[in-house]
Length: 149
Image (cartoon, rainbow, N blue to C red; front, side, top):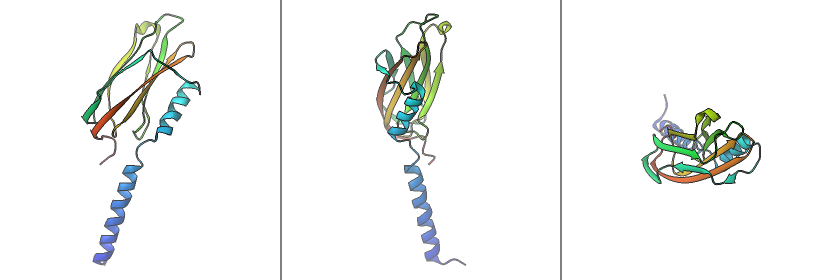
């Protein structure tokens, strides 16, 4: 039978392990940068053309509205083919990828995302001829949604 000291030590160790796991469950900014680099093939995206509609602050990160749009033609030989949404603070930085064709009419998407805490959202758009455009926006989150607690 375990003594009271052993039980307390075991509980304290379990709490410390859970706390450390929660602290390490968010992506570091370099992981988000790696996701962007993989998407762009190492090319540097140009700033501009991408619009992000995201609240400046939210109370609960479990369902945050996000709208992205790219001001670019959608012609047969010149269109936005993909949009990547990356989160610098979620356990998995690549939050969403949207695919488009010229028949899409406009390169825009609306969704809801989960955010683990206050962080920066990065959106990168890829054109059919291999150019990239980027924008980013910070969001403050009071209660995170991706920590599993």
